[in-house]
Structures are given as C-alpha cells and as structure tokens.
Length: 418
Image (cartoon, rainbow, N blue to C red; front, top):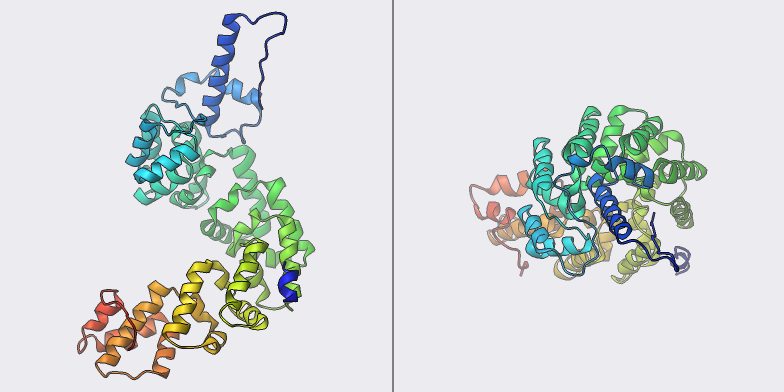
C-alpha cells in the first residue's frame, strides 16, 4: 500500500456617535447601495469583474435609462421569490430545480422584459431549448444582464473567432466577462501557446469553461508549471488542445500529479504519460485514492490496478458508483473474472446501459435461436467496434431474427443468459 499512501468593496456608512445622521442622508445612502447592487448584477461583472467601485458608479450615471427592466438580485433570503421561480420554470427548469436555483443563486426577477430579451438574443444566435436551460440553471444572473451592451458583443467576438456561440451554454458566465480586460487577453495568450487557430478553436470547443481562467492568476502559472515539469512547448500545446480545462488546475496540483506518475513508474517520455497526466489533473488527490481503493475492492492487486490505469487512463472519468455497477456486472453476471478486465481494460470505458447491456441482449436472442454459441463469442462481441458488432450480430440476422433489432434498441431487456 506504500504507493497508495504516497499518492496520498464593501462601503460602510456609520453615523457619528455625537451627530445623528440626517434622514435625507440615510435615504441617499440606501439608494446608492441599491443602485450599486443592481448595476453589478445587471452588468454581470462585464467590466472586468466589477472590482473597481469607481467604474461601477460612473457606469450608472450616463446609462441609467438603459436598465429599465432591472431586477433586485443577490438578495439574502431563505425563501425563493415566487415570481422568480415561475419565470425560471418558463425557461425550462423543473419546479424543484427552479426553486433551488432561485435560492442558491440568490436571484430575484421582478420584471421579465430584460430576461425575455436575453433569451431571445440567445435563441437568435443558435441556443436551443436545452442550451437555454443549461445556461439559466448554471448562471441565472445572465437574465439580468443588458443583452445589447453586455451579451451581444461577447457573442459577436466568439463568432468572429469561429467559435460556435451555443457552445457557451456550458460556460455562460463568459458572456458577462470584459472583452478588453479578460477575453481578448485570454485568447491572445492561448494563441501564443497553442499556435494554430484551428487547434485553438478545437481546444475551446472541448472545454469552453477554461476561458474563465485569468491569464495572470491561472493560465500563465499553469504553463510555467508544466514547463518546470519538463513538458516541451509542443507537448503543452497538445495538452491544451485535448484538455484545455487543465488551465483551471493549480500549479501545485500539476506538480503533485507529475510526482504521482513518477511514483508509479511512469516517465515523461512514455507515450502514455500525457494521457495519464491529463486524466489525473481532472481529479483531486483524495478522489484518485478512492478510485484506486474501489478497484482493489474487486480483488485486484495494487500493481494490477495501476497497470489498468496506465493502459486506459480514461477509466478515471467514471464515478465510483458507475464503475462499481459495471464491474460487478462483468464479474457476477457474466462471470468473466478479473483476468478478463486486466487483459481487456478497454471494456471499462464502455457504457453499461449504452453498450454492454444492449449487446448482451442481442447475444441472448441469438443464443436462444441457436445462431451463436457462448464462450468466446461473448468476449469477442463485447470488445469489437460498434459498427462491426452491428453488422455482424444485428444486421446480418435482422431478417431471420427480428428480435435482434429490438434488443439492440433496448426494447428487449437483458435479464441473464440462463
């Protein structure tokens, strides 16, 4: 177990104690607070995070008339606003989801004009119903942002770079980030590291949320940490294209992952190193240890678990419950044994409900009709490419055994080979 252990601006207005505050002064202070709060939420920190009070104050004066449908947001209240919950439901959220979102995100929508305009703008630029739901669920305050002054310029910016606007549904807060202070510098930095415009677009499309990282606080330190670990510029470019989300990883975690891989006998020259490094960066150390412990609970030794990981690092993408159900099915229902998993770790990357169970259902139907025998047919059928399986076991028997099509489509459930 030694290897496992080794892995192991707040404005405060206070009255003078001797001179009581004038009532009009109290009213003015209250108005200012509400004005600042409303502006911060409407702009969605569009001016570079909203950290400069002077910029917030100045932005309220000449353009106050543009925020006619502003809402009171970020109001501490244990009970969700009924009007807000109702509106979120109209966006596609479930009643329970709308209540949770309104409460946890502390948002109140008292006028729907602005929110409707935001949704209309998103739809005009390719967002479908699912994209709207995803956007509103994760960042409901975007409904309070000015659609023409805050959101539209960001959509146009990404479109000009060849990015599909609807991809932003997975990271909608990017639509409220400052162009000059955040988005443009981020793209310029990444262009310098990645080089190719096509690769930049590809990397962003895979992990849009990576652009939420700040250049100086996140991106540059991460790239420097990778270089200290021995990654070449070409390797760093490849890493960012395949998993740009690594930019949200702390430099300390990057160094830790590098040392963990060294501890299990991997060196940076190993062709598998990049894949293992990328997957481990997705997890915190304690989650990595839980994954290892899970596999050992199936009767695998520490060395066997590590060899499986080296061969198929993508197994870390599956949660413990998902993987446990899958492995238990292979061991208990199909009786394949741990030796099968060690020899064919790629089976662990197949979805149980999406791949393994439908294939087993097809094989059961074919066995029932005497078209195939068990044993080696089962192992081979579980491992072949989906197109090969479909041609060999479904299409070739569809005329004689129509049930194979139903089984492959999930209409006939697999309940065992007995």
